[in-house]
Image (cartoon, rainbow, N blue to C red; front, side, top):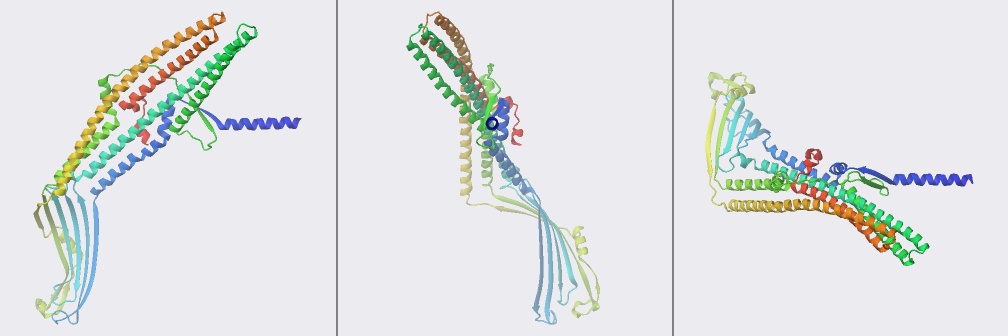
Length: 517
């Protein structure tokens, strides 16, 4: 007997622990749900990457202004037969080395600037050389700049400006997703509150029906009521039990929707998490004039900001296309300083034709570099080149296409502003209507409660029937649900108006940067 009792206690304990681990209640306020959604919602997690990619595109476009370093080396050794004793005794040998380093930099207005240093060494066995080996160095400054086509800051920074505008567009789209997510969470949260309260109202209605059923049983037993009245009460109880099943399913559906939005999942798919809403819907009158609403929407609506940047992009494309129709006039300026040195050969009687070297004066590559660096020999040149295209068909087509795209963007902006005005009017009207519905259903519920109290008193005195009491009970249940639905709809209409105005972040005290990072 003791073993059986111990086994029973063990099984009961295991079942209790398992039930507790598989069922977990999480109390959450509306702010908690919004915070979780902004941090864990998978759709937002995906959208977070788009502004980041846009920022990378901006950085990549700016890289063209980073200086570029170019290095080159050329070493050549040549051997050829000598066809004249004046050239060399047997064969002509020449060793040549060339090194260059160049630093170039683009100018934001369209030109380019470069500075280069070239060094060379030439050594040969040819006769009659006065310097051998010979070293050369040249320091060169080059500046090239367009004066018509491809001239100007806007034209040459087109890709950077487009990347920045696209980054702002991506930011606006991300904000739009955040606003829609906040509204979806609010809608799911308040609908969950409604379904829970509606379930409670249905349960209260069922308790009233059961209480009346018990009283009818006693009345039938003592002969005050006919058996048909008992069947009527039992049918009403069954109907209200069916209503509860429907209300319970609605609670579960809204639970699942809210858990999906805030990504409230567990590793064990068999476990069950139940959200308990902590906030109750309030009825606080919030009136916003149409003019004020328009000002807020123009300031905060992300789609309006997006279309503005799109129009800026199209304006930029038009300017660029017009610029490409201009002639190509380029200014080029160069300044260079050469230097030369080497080992000087001293010939007999100072005559190289004798071929007799009687001495040398050593010289190195440093001497050539010093001459170049000190600008011992200054040289410069300035030139203009003009290229007039005779066929600009493709450029004109590009201009026409850019103008059409810009006109389309402006028409989309006008259409969006018209839709915005309509949405604001609808949102404001919904807020006003739902507030009136709340007041009307509150009065209806209070009157229905009084009518039910009166009818129950009449039934107690034998002056009413089961049918009449059931009707008043159902009327009260419907009145409570209608009032609650009106309160929920009023809160949802406030949330929708915030979505339309784009002010959800401000009203919920949410920083977009905090959501991104």
